[in-house]
Amino acid sequence: MTISQLRAFVYSVDGGSFTAAAEALGVSQPTISALIRKLEEHHRLPLFIRAGRRLSLTSAGQELLGWARQIVESSVRADEALIELRGLQRGSISLGVLRNANFYFLSEAVEQFQRARPQVQLRLFGQNSFEVVEGVRSGRLEAGVVVLPVPDDELEVFPLIRDEVLWASIHPERVAAPVSIQQIVEHPVVLYDASYSWNDPTRRQLSERAQEHGLRLEPQVEVEYLEAALDLVARGVGDTMVSRAVTQGESFPESIHVAPFDEPMYDTIAFIRRRNSVLSPAIIELIDLISALLRKRAPEDAQL
Image (cartoon, rainbow, N blue to C red):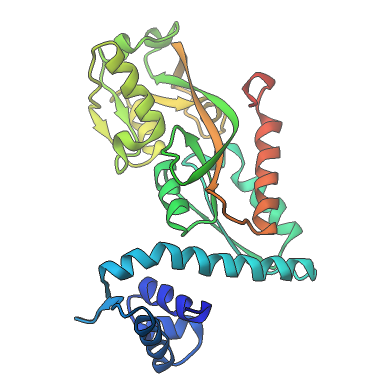
């Protein structure tokens, strides 16, 4: 098999048709069809179910996809690395970021990176660390910055800093002292990241803490975004969890009070990549920049 055949295969899967793959690669549709046919003939296995308007993978195609994507992306990274060595700063990089990235590094990192590499297209994805992990594992993202814990099979994990998780309420008496999980379940709770629910790393920590005390934490309201949860807390609907970095942002409502947990809880922020993957020089530079910003803003006892 050849890189051209694997590239045609991957782009056909991502685009849903040979026509979409041809458009993405700048070749004719018959060229894509011929490359796929040769790949199938070489292995004597069909890779696609050719029924309907959108391609579907056979079991052989599903088995090949992960390997093919890794080979194709490695070839792209190799090309970009050689381009970088020639001093041509162009191409694109895809990085997954944690939910509250803007409170930690996002705007400043993008600004500094774009000043240094104005010809590099920067693509940042992710609403939740769980989503970022799936993107890195599947190869859609080159690397990611996440909150731990995350499933780490097929991944390399490099912890950077930790940030304390606090409990937030509009009622000052509820957060006048460090808060226990027993106190939390006594009042209505508002939680964000509804789509990911207890797959969210911070929510999972909270749930496990409740289970350790024989309690069950049931949110009164679940919403998608942190900003919506804070607005509901400010309206007295319920209490929520929030990282210390968020409380230090200018947009954090003045009417909301916070307190630590009686057993301190932390979000550990880490860099992840696929095991044994080769990163492009540009994304290594971006990761180094993000790591420096995180460590600059974190207290010494929060650095790992």
